[in-house]
Amino acid sequence: MEVYNPIVNISWPLPGVFGITLLLGMIFATVVIYLVIYYFRLKEQTRIQNYQLFLFQVKRKGLSNFQIKILRNMSAYLKLANPRDLVSNAALFESSLADFTGYIKSQNEERENITDIIRDIAVIHKKIFSKTPYLKPFESMSDLEDAEIIYLTDDVNNVFPGKVTGRGSGFVSITLFTPAKNLKLFENEKPVALHVLRLDDAEYMARTVTAGIEMNQLKVKDTTEITKEREFRHPYINVMLSAFITIEKPTVQEPDDMAESADKTNLTESLEFTVVQLNEYECVLRSTMQLGFDRHFPLIFQLDTFKLSAMARVISSRTVEKDSVYYLTMKFTEMSDSGRAVLRKFIAESM
Image 1 (tube, helix red, strand yellow):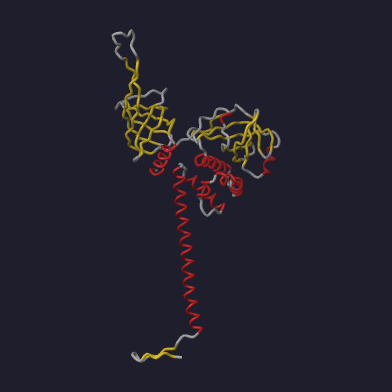
Image 2: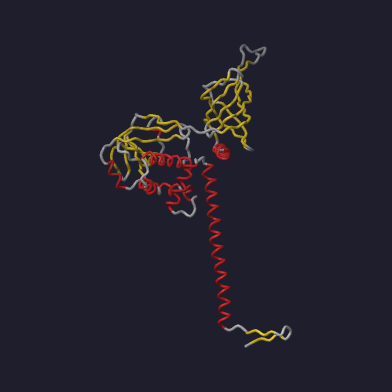
């Protein structure tokens, strides 16, 4: 059947069932293709957004590029759609350690590289999940915190990450992140070394011996053979910031007519310095005066719009006699969580 148009003197056939079906099929296929492309584009945008949020989160925690790479590899190994899951869930992170470290060892990496990766895994856990990542120096086995992540090495080049899970009379219990079959290595007494990290201080090694396995937990004997293996050196960034330190100036009040002795009081004075170098744990001040090594000083300086307050002490001093200038290295001893987060972000963005 045809339709005739007398104006343009043209006639054309009406579509049959097949033609209508074909047309509707083409429209449907176009819609499906569009929806598929839209879905994958939306999925890619979500992936990019999640990764950007992941980067923001870990950089705020002060992770290095190498540590971020470890987390990316862990996320890929676990086939996680969102890498943020790994840094938001301590149980997921810890449950993946046995398989992930086993995977690393299967890649024929050198022992030194494996040890470096496992050390960084312990650092990552402390920075992200620990409520008290900055602990006092490790001087005795009693300084080990419950749930603290450490790593263990033995005399045949085995290395395992572990977690402090308890203590008893003369021993500490540790859960090793390794398949249960590897615990047979420690059924008999065996010399091992515990490696304990203090992020703002150093890595320590405690030489001890195992004391058996109980409920899949390794027991190691208390020891006093503790040495500092390496101090953590954190790179400085160069800055030029005004800083203020408040010091107390003892004075003597004149006695009243009826008083028999002077009454000593303390007045405070705010002194201005210049911060010339800065990292997460220390700063270097330029000054025309020296400060004592035996005191903790309240230190204030501005980072963008944030007024950062901390307690700090002098740990080293260098003098430029020609200009009568002192360069004082100050170690932060107290700082609020919000202040430390702002400082980490400032350092990360300035590197």
